Length: 196
Image (cartoon, rainbow, N blue to C red; front, side, top):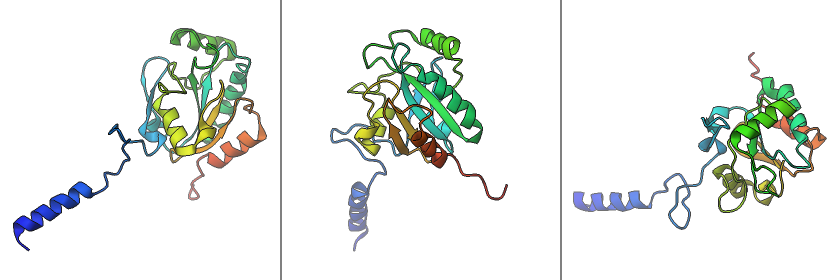
């Protein structure tokens, strides 16, 4: 085989090789391999990359200030206090997708959460969680975990494991104190290093 033929064959092989990410049919950006490839913006306007939570379990909850389920903030804060030293992050994602129940600005939402429920777990800026304008995290959750990860109302819970993959999803009516949620969190927490 001539050098020219070998070069042509290698070129064709390189074009046919997988790229490591899956592209949408329209040639859009590759789908993320894990939540760690996605970033939010904090409620204070700072970058909040999910990669900063690598090695931790993350409970992502779409929240709203004027919902009948808003008192779940108290239970979410309790989960944060109980498990944060064991590697759980509770991440609130304020969203106005359901019933217009989160109409305020980021500053108003933050003030409400801190003064009404003493929330100090991380909050993102207000984002959409469903439909064509859904934040990339929610697109990833739907594509990787299926319909159970799609919020149907405020306070839907998505548990992400230490590997950045969706481990479980819970509907709105599942309270932060629910035994099934607690069991899933316990299973998703980082395992202690046996050498310690």
